[in-house]
Length: 86
Image (cartoon, rainbow, N blue to C red):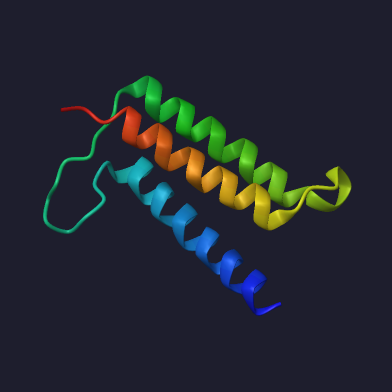
């Protein structure tokens, strides 16, 4: 129970950070530029929407909320790291 609560909090924090990166383009306070290509941003936005819908409808779709959230968070960071501009 404690582990599940911890994982849910972790997913929310990671997802919130992903939203900040998507909306602002900056992930840190030092002014580092973490911008991506527009197509990468679109892919991340679509993946976040699909993941959020999966979490929202987890009871009717018989998905595990934690599993969907973790998969979404990892996928977002993978797409972000692949699409970083040099």
